[in-house]
Image (cartoon, rainbow, N blue to C red; front, top):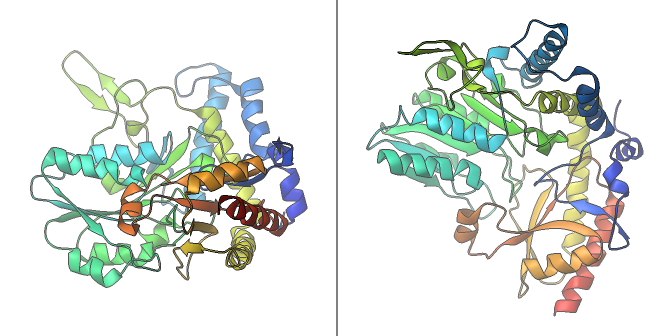
Length: 405
């Protein structure tokens, strides 16, 4: 397929939408991405011709749905280079994936133990560990963020001790755009016998994800941040760890056998998939990952890096503007603050001009507290955005600043 921006934009019907009489400029891809026709059609086709519950019937339509669902699992395993489809758990998304593992670790973390996360974590990779540590009387420790939006690996090594039972870190910050050195972090952790959980919500659509190369013990992401449907996501876990964890939920499908006295849980991956799964979501997510694969991640990285550099240069000309986070290794996520102005006020004016941009704390209140900021304006770009859109945004932002000062 290659990278042809006009062809790509034509795949996304919503990009032709008008907002307040203006052509939509959508720069909130860190929150959710739009869906190409290939994904929309795949979900629609499933409900039109293939809809059935999976794993549970002897009739042909159920066999078809089951094969499609399990083939999606196998495709995901290959896409992220997992060792086996058994290491792929379908969840509702990143949030449920983190909660699933945190629930399982409630049996493994006891009083006096420690869990390490970073200050830059999204609430989804912050609160579950915070609550687990409170419940089990363990200690949650925070690796600080440096002024440029990166972390110091030597400081991480200093934090690790015999009490450390887990390190959980975002692959890419949803606020700063920083790409964290997760492979090196896994190496440091494993040298100390510590498992690593990686939140890949912001990574899956912007960089190559190879869980075998990273050598993390857990990795998760959401379909909707990678041009797929909402309500579907993936938890990858090494088999040895998934076998150690207790199920997160109980019910149908995750049972091997049950009687009045006891229950034997199903084998991996079904042990963690209670109830009727989101089959259409899994098929839609497979279609979205195939879409990314067809374009080529290297092509996407190259194009998005061009957008990042172009946008950064344009924004530097706005009076009073400061970019929060300037890591050398980052995706096209730019958080900005304008002296004397509240992000919400600017965002409201931009909406009047057809610009969709995120304002606030971006579900990262501890990071905002550390940065001493009420929030930021966040520009998060995707493969369908253009330099022309960046020009429109920069002009609109300059107008908004003039109106408010």
